[in-house]
Image (cartoon, rainbow, N blue to C red):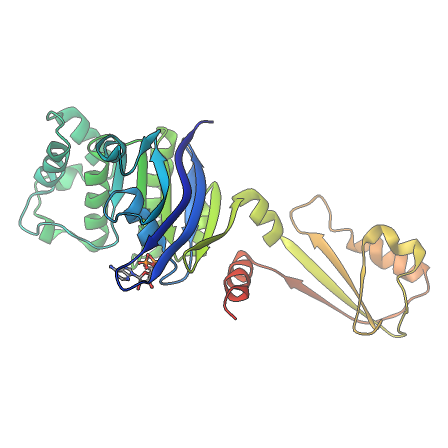
Length: 309
Ligand SMILES: Nc1ncnc2c1ncn2[C@@H]1O[C@H](COP(=O)(O)OP(=O)(O)OP(=O)(O)O)[C@@H](O)[C@H]1O
């Protein structure tokens, strides 16, 4: 796959000296869905705004489809659709005119068939003649997406696409995003909902205090999330893990009074039965056992807290 968005040591210092981006580097592949996770104030919107030309970076560089976001602004911007966090729509305008007008802003000829396709895809065709103020919050969000798509962008930025929408509508939105991906659109979305990243992202990037802490394939992250640990409290403490148990990669804990075993819930088998049999064979008797699961949420919170002394 080709790289479509390339961010290299991007920096943003706001007037007053606040460093909102502290050297962000990131490559995004054509056709992928990248979820940008981070706490409030992490720099997600600043990063998206810089890539879309709304905020001027104070250092580093970035390209969209090979066009520099500063020196090649118009060409870069033409490739981008942006769905902002805030619902900035003209309340008395009709849905279809709102979308048509946005296409015109990019200097593109009127294309009724395309507008119809986009409105149908977003289940807005029946509402095309409704005024914006007559729509529900979820529909307004869909209009924002339609506006962002009407000049046929190759890269779509969604800033908190499902903030404040109900669970059902969130799932609808996920389907819309999947449909766009199927058409080859590259999608970068910011979200506070970790389950949203789990549901639709190919890769996850975690940003905190203007720095990228991690960019990882979701499947790999899920594998980490699927990891569980089993703590086995022993009746008699051990001073080392017996040789016969070395294949289980056990960890001695609590001054030798417990063994910790890590396993993957998504694997073929957990290995727990075999381990318990092996412990019995070694003549070890157990006082208690306890399992713990690490979630993506925990991984995320852990990463972010590590950074906050
Ligand atoms: N125009 C501005 N002038 C000064 N500081 C700003 C400006 N815009 C944003 N900031 C600061 O930059 C930091 C990053 O803000 P940003 O909106 O990018 O965060 P975010 O990750 O999108 O947060 P949220 O999840 O709350 O939307 C924040 O501390 C914010 O206060």
